[in-house]
Image (cartoon, rainbow, N blue to C red; front, side, top):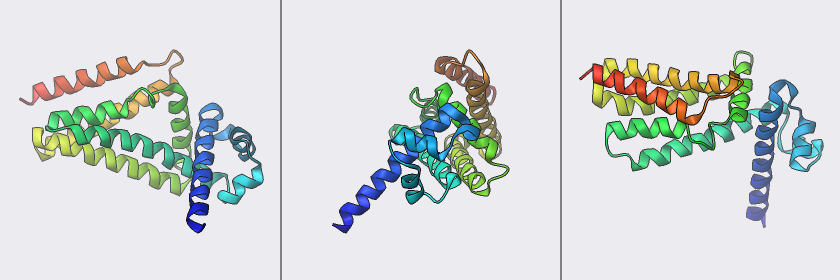
Length: 196
């Protein structure tokens, strides 16, 4: 019975994290409230507070949940990659999967990123995200370019990825996934051909 109860608690917490992220996509951090999350999840504010101490903890967990989905998408593609170039493509394609590269998700990400300077826990989560991206990129680029050039290009590629997500969130007409991938692949092709 205890195991079953734990699973129910885990399921409910996951539902509330997902509801929080969906509210965040629609409302931004300033407009997202525990009441709106509760309504979206078909629960009461008291239920939300039963599972999460406060708004901050709930949205931290929502950020972790969203990041885990993206991390898993990249990891799945990396498992199928057999060469450094395939690893690089896997990282890029995973970061621009259609189900993630949506204006509403970019808005939620921007809203959370805006809180990073004031919220140490969000800053730690963001640091982990950047560290994982950098490590993945190095594993693909160092074998092709060597350590120094690989580190330089890893920073360039991660900055370009972040910049394209930023553009998606800020550009009123949006930026299509196809356009984003064309831009980043063009950069990579030019950069790698330069170093041959």
